[in-house]
Image (tube, rainbow, N blue to C red; front, side):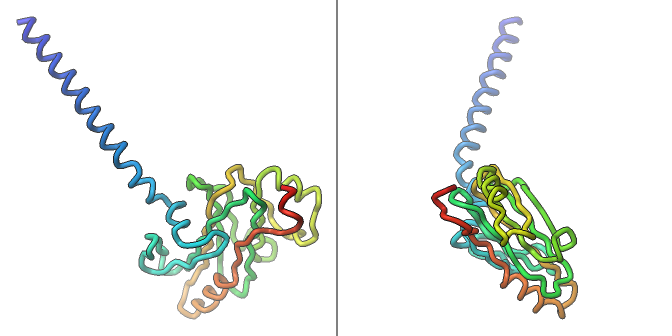
Amino acid sequence: MPRIFALQVLFSVVTGLIGAALLHLVIVLLLPDFSERDAYTRVLAEGESHRFYRLGEKPDRAGLSKDDPFVDTAVCAFDVSEGPLRLTAPNGGVPFWSLAVYDQSSNEVFSINDRTSAGGVLDVVIATPVQLTSLRQAQPPALSQSILVETTQAEGYVVLRSLVPQPSFADIASQFLSQATCTPFEWRSRSRF
């Protein structure tokens, strides 16, 4: 009787080990497929960095779409390893806008909306800690109203949203997003960063 029990325990342990090995193998083999579906990779697939791309109602070639019919959305991938990034957009009567900055792991680094910005205007500079120190020391006049955001990861993406509560606001929201910029901030020679 003890011998049969020992064989059953051995069989259970071997079956568990084989099952665990197969599960881990499946996970390792599927990991590349899932890693290509993260938000950062999809934003990169929209096109070149440092440019806003508008999202439509239906998923585009990168698989991105706006998730709310009352909110127009634009995304921009960035890399601040060579210098800071400046995000700007004039507020031409948009009822509400919000901006979220994410690192390449899709962790939210910073967010702002028109109620917390200076005069309802979007003016944000994203930079590494070293770049921000240089900006604060130089105090360029162009940044007097800008909000400075520090990021420890050089690469990431930005999501800009504009509220469209009624169809009459569609043109205003569209104009706001089309005038938004996501460009490197050139205030001195890049070689000094």
